[in-house]
Image 1 (cartoon, rainbow, N blue to C red):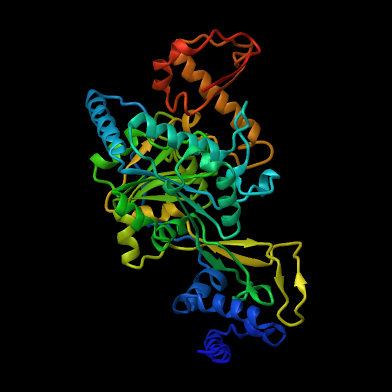
Image 2: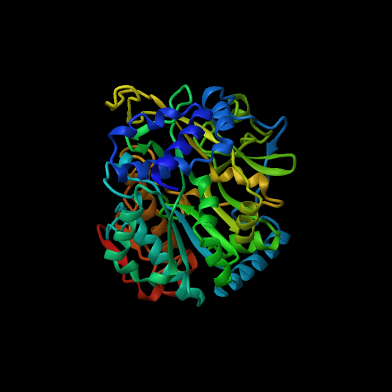
Length: 476
């Protein structure tokens, strides 16, 4: 079909959906620009477009909560009964076996940019470690490599980028020689995108030859894994479990034998880690149980009365917060995509640069003018036949770096990284000097090559020299 025939065919489809304005500037485009625009338009899933616009853009009803739900049960971070101690021991041994057999792969969602941090580039390239200034990507890569050495397997790492930073990310890894990992054992792929809309449901143009689009959210990772061939690659390699985490958290325990083991022992398809919320209104999702299924209700959707509700002992009823750490079966992702699943969309009203469809003038809005739709990965939890939650301790595994200052800032994350390193040293019987306020009177950074968990430090404690006040100690 030549370009003019494609134009006529696409125009007719657009008229059927009242989106013909997307071809308003056809006459001023050159041939390559026309092809680019047609390719983008033909990628739109028109079969679901009208319903999507009506439900999420023009007549949004908001999140529909289950009629009844309760707080979801979770395994405690530390076993509390003899029965739990026995199960945890068995789970750890099973987890180690599965990791050593190469059944578990790392998967980082790394599509974000460092804009909120005042950083120009992919967030994964943001430097964060307290002494060596290692980037997030480097910390994860060194952790993956160290896990391979510890458990005796060839680790595989799947990295989901976004269309915006895919090329940049590939360049970063190439310039850093893949941080010591084998190039063929890192699988890069971009997440999908969703078109952006005006308030009346019109698809926006970013340029006269280009649709306005944005990443489809971390929920899109479950489709991107499949469409990219990553799931097929996992199957070829014998990988059964996916350790999912997001790029902003340098404390992530990527290969956690306990988490892997409990997930496998209980026959779960998609599981989660949680932390105790710092307060009733902390801006994290709430783990709940509805119709026997684990689900996450966003902080903005949980009524304040419920968020504040307490048990007789004074603790919160809804105390478990979602921190975007999951264990996912490869077969679960495969099955979802074979069924043609769709996660619900979440609407975000944003400032979106776009083309005025009448004048062709570029608009740089001062206030929100458009709508982006995205999906959240935790919305897949109710689709799993079985799902478990494992509580983890915030100071040991959750220090996201999101903001330039204040909460979740680099300063806070670095303090938490130092505090965790000091805690590991204390557990190994190493004296660490303290200030009058009991904070460390030194700066400690532990490289993954030295230890990837608390127990690893005990095994190498004889290699650690005495630490003096004011020291900066990098252990590798």
